Image (cartoon, rainbow, N blue to C red; front, top):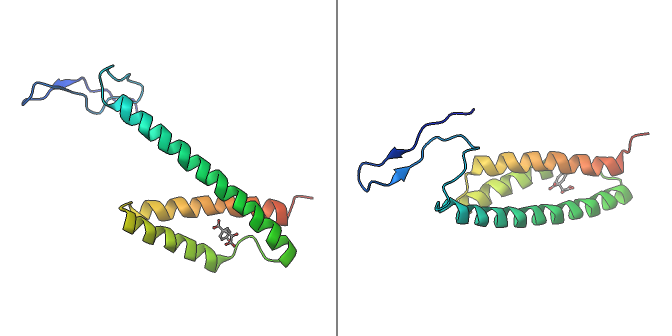
Amino acid sequence: MREIRSAGLAPKAGRVHFRRMSIDTPLPPESRMHDLRKRIDALDSRLVALLAERSRLIDEAAAIKLQENLPARISTRVEEVALNARRRAEVEGLNPELAERLWRLMMEYFIAQEDAVLSPDP
Ligand SMILES: O=C(O)C(=O)C[C@]1(C(=O)O)C=C[C@H](O)C=C1
């Protein structure tokens, strides 16, 4: 969607408000969004580092499962992890639906990562 609505003057303070602008619209240089985006980018980079750490734990899980003859997907555990994510989200003030969906998606990728070790293509 490339919707553009021109900036309008807010009635009260006479400040310019930009609403529903397209994502490729540059921010005004004085926008407080520049600083906020730096904080978002810094946080994203920590999230990626944590996910990379999780991925290394999954490599360890795959090695153990290979030795102990366990499958990549253990459905009861998948449900437990999804429920943990929901509950943590509720405590932390994150939408639990979002947490559950993200965790289920993430686990599908990690199950595939384990499967690549446990059932490699011939
Ligand atoms: O707990 C396991 O069995 C894992 O391998 C970890 C993990 C996960 O990503 O959290 C991955 C695969 C599923 O079987 C369940 C959970």
